[in-house]
Length: 475
Image (cartoon, rainbow, N blue to C red):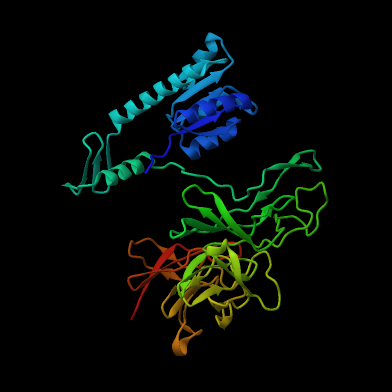
């Protein structure tokens, strides 16, 4: 197993110098990330957690001195300044602002790398002097003595196990990779009515919980609509990302051209920030991808605000296996039909419906056939929250503040077994006054025979607020 490369952040607006420095650092074993602005440099410094920053002072959107002052408010990462400013006062100001070294242009690669090695040594020596012992819980690791203890008892690790442990410690809190859900380059779209430049495509946000596919080394996420004038190829989609580096391996787009922005009209003029034609806002919401194995075959299941359930083949780059329309008489509005996702039990997948009276549709995982739609009798808002399934029962909460258990077998198949109205005051075990309300983005959790559910959700449809965690047990 090879150790992950140390990360260097290069902030320089001259492409030739960037290429020169990048080539030199990569030859020395660095993983180099580049940017050419103060703004993006601060973002990358915070998200990528570099071990070294090489900084030019003259940048298009500001002065490198401003970057230094901001950075030193929250980070001690070594910074080497590369600048054409040769005056003594310029060097003094940069060093006083937090730079660790200062190299004037033009410069030689040998001197640059020597200064990089010196900065790295100083950082490592400081880490060894102040951070040789790590403790979390009852585990204590002494890197200088190479010992590991748990609860005061020595733990024997093989050399490989110890190496893995030290790598995890060394990379704690680091962003290992970052992937854009829109792979197309950002481009100018012309000026709007006030003379401001517009950019796109934008949007395709990920606002759901990823699904991990350890067998294939992938994670799956769903994306939302676009913003602005143009649409991307990966909005309203299921994306498959490679776990080790975030590379997009494939994607399935269910709704093309969905560009939606609040306060825009159905049709908008060419000089507007709004899309020419307003999209339906058919995001894939929370918990939208579920990996289920049926007769030895893995199937990826998803449904979103557009009210369409799909099954994809993860072994054939997301090939569509079936598609089922969940709405009956009228296509969903921008509020959506399936908002926060469904649940599966190995034979069926269940989707709560945000529609008048609510509903819970059960689909056969193999075919997508709708086997039943449970009569929920919710209020006009229905159910937005995700379902949770265990053998024989699906739990679903509504905007009306009622948690319902729906049977999935025998005589109770597709029928409400019990319900609990949480819109009330509660006496709590910790003595904090509590009220129940609507059930929203967090679905029930079942552990050890107990059902846990949070109640109180405002959302977008005037939900009832609350602040209580409820625990239900079998009688």
